Image (cartoon, rainbow, N blue to C red; front, side):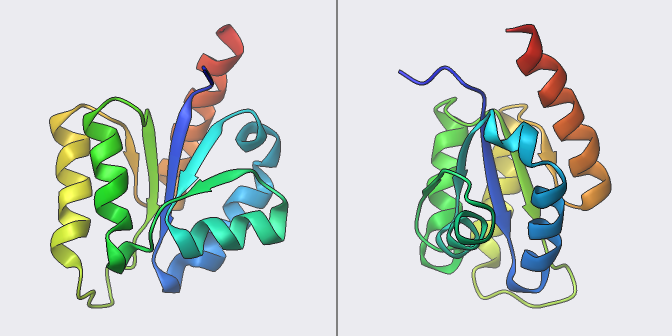
Amino acid sequence: MDDRFTLALIAHDGKKDDLLRFAREHLDVLRELRLVATATTGSLLAAELGLEIERVASGPQGGDLQIGARIVTGEVGAVVFFRDPLTAHPHEPDIQAVLKVCDVHDVPLATNRASAEILLSRIEEISHRR
């Protein structure tokens, strides 16, 4: 069994480049983690950065809900979700469900670069103590 900390990565289309830049700057930390991502985001990060990422369905096809289920079961320890708040999303209820389960299950959630920086630095600190 893989005992590494599990981080979920999600990014709306308008934020995928931002997540890619963020991930590139934090490759060393991300390589130490178990990563799960929605399909398109995970494929982009794997292709561009060579990261090993488990991919679930795309967000609009239920990937957000798949990650939400893993939060509920304790399989995901934190989420980085670069949301695009200025664009309408037809799967908005699924997006809200991810945010809700993070709150209900006390799972850290970063929805922008500033909060992702803080979250990842804390994950790195915890991972090095193991």
